[in-house]
Length: 404
Image 1 (tube, helix red, strand yellow):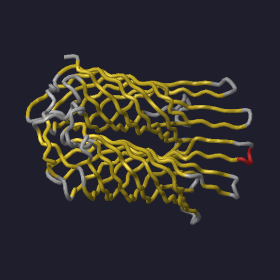
Image 2 (cartoon, one colour; image 1 turned 180 degrees about the vertical axis):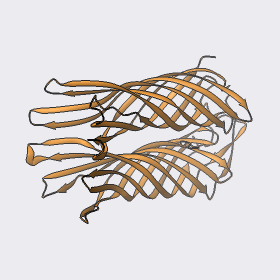
Image 3 (cartoon, helix red, strand yellow; image 1 turned 30 degrees about the horizontal axis):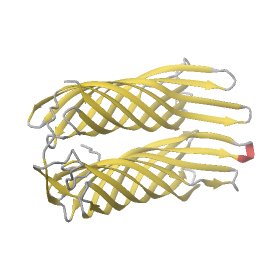
């Protein structure tokens, strides 16, 4: 089970979530870790030689493995600051099959050097933001023997939570958005600007990890009950496209943007630290695939949708819940052109995800959650000549209020 990252630290008078009673974890010191994740890439294309044509963009998705090492320092007010370096190898990319040509464009390997700043939101849980430098190697290969590769640097931003499993072992889960520098081809006639949206889960070993000597009393939060919440986030959509009965198979077109949702749910503790529940959520978003050219533009946007989901979780303590979530999802898509053409359609599918929720008071919790959603395909009445099947990778950060 993935869990976002957060830290615990020394209790001070102006930190109401940390009083005296339960042992608080000491996050200071060096650590190493290993893990992996899943995510999407979106390549924005532009061509100045054709009057500034832009296309956002070519998308793909895949897995990666990762190793990491870092150092954190915990201040007496519950704040944790640190630095970390991570290296990864994976297959996040896109493929094109057409008339015997097979081409793959993959983000193969890379590294990040980041700083992070966090706060101990529960005795054994740290929430944090991160940012820094990222580097990625991209490879374009074909079955005809030609291809190219290039390296690109950029910046990375993210957020996450980290929780103590036992002793020196912790588990962190985080979302990272990386934006890479432009790569020029054909003497500057074509520019490629990649960005990635990735979800990471890492098991860490902390060499100096253990109780800090400071104590904190647990918040008196009853997880059984009805809750309402608000969340905001972002991510990417990859549109897998088949043309002419799969004679052309392109995976795929990509879009990215932001989202917001409102949700209501019910949870029930079932004993031994386990919880089951359900969530109904409605969302709006601006995740958009756009093409612009002199005198013309078109847009494909995921506008709004809803989810009906079940979740199953494990309480690490009275304040911290790690969970998986899954169920039915629905999305409304809208296509429009500057010439007045338009179309819209609705698709259903399934959602799978994971997250962590932490009680701040006896009524309020905060959570971070990653979701992968796969929708059915739309053929636009062409009898299968044109089929588009979207999937999305999103992260949301929110808060819930327990009604009773």
